[in-house]
Amino acid sequence: MKVWIKIQRVTQGAKEEIVVAICDEELLGKKFGNFKISEHFFKGELVEIETAIKSLENATIANLVGRDIVTKAIEEGIVKKEEIKEINGIPHAQIFTI
Image (cartoon, rainbow, N blue to C red; front, side, top):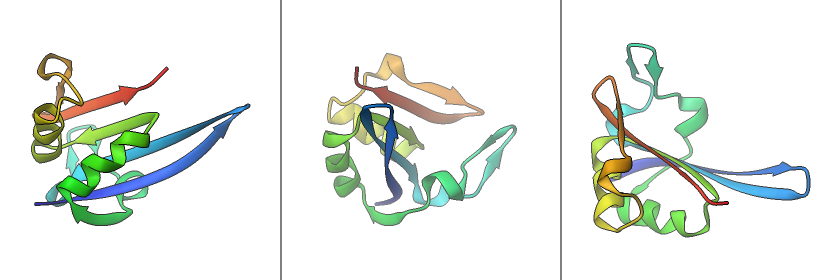
């Protein structure tokens, strides 16, 4: 199972954020109502889902979109099922470290 992942380093003042965006392979570029899975934001590298999950270890901010990646994140204990939102039927999770 593959997903798209894009990792960006963003400096905000003195703090550096590591932003990880991951979406299920088949969702990239699709639009669901007002919710678009933007190639600009998510298209980086197409990787195995396990590789994407490992990349979350260093993330300070993460956006996960799609049934496959969100389900795997729940299974791995990265997010809780009750924290998942659905946008036009697509599972979405956001992770922030403070």
